[in-house]
Length: 75
Image (cartoon, rainbow, N blue to C red; front, side, top):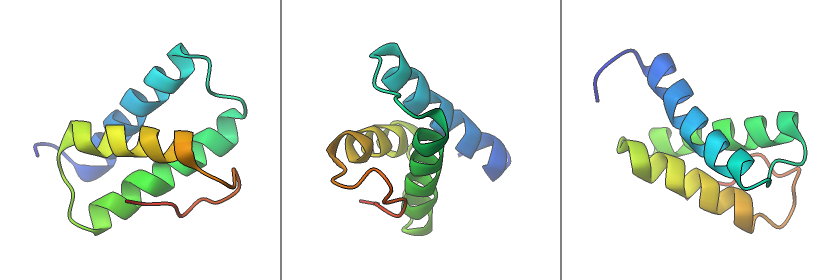
């Protein structure tokens, strides 16, 4: 991991966002951004640092969420 954490988190969030947006799966931009950011932050707190794992798990969680208002879903 190289670079300041906030910049890296933004990068990981952007990867997940662009994937979901490219598939037309972003219905509510604010809710989507909050969900992805919360998920990535939770993963980081659990020790995950691999870029693609963070982004892919955030995408999977977003796609599988039962309650779209649930912001703390984390692997």
